[in-house]
Image (cartoon, rainbow, N blue to C red; front, top):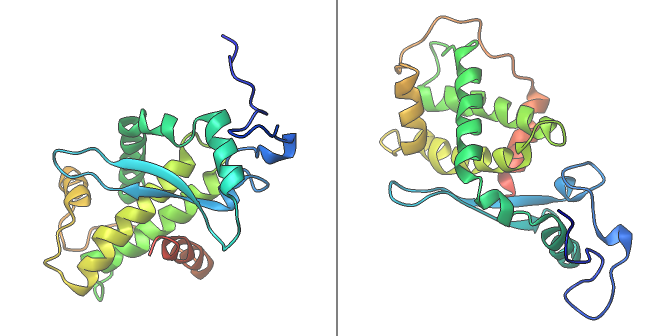
Length: 199
């Protein structure tokens, strides 16, 4: 079915230039210049995605508006929020199953932080290659910031979304056999710089 709207016709009378409409998720597009706001869901409410925000102090308002008009992002993602969440938790599950290991001098939240920061970097590199990687990247960044980071400072802090996953994986707070998680300092720096955008 053909679109009934002209993507170059903006919300004002002025017609857009083709370069105003970025390719999504690519280095040359908004994926490298924006982040997605995510509100984690509680028991009775779903997770909410959007809106896109510029990473730097640059005016991308018109570009983000054009992106929303043409691709219906992030509104279209909200209709797939369950799929995005399932894909993300499947990725976390696969990641933790391969090489989960807690060194003796680390606690569960510290280990989880390092592991999930490594996965966050992987998801960031998957943008443009894996469907929904952009949305999963910012969902995971929000999850780390709101559940794992606070648990490092206060072990009694709840991790509701991650706790369900950890129980399903039967991971206790003791060390599990495994080869460890190879995480470079560059990966951790990338992940932490992404998460700082949300703070």
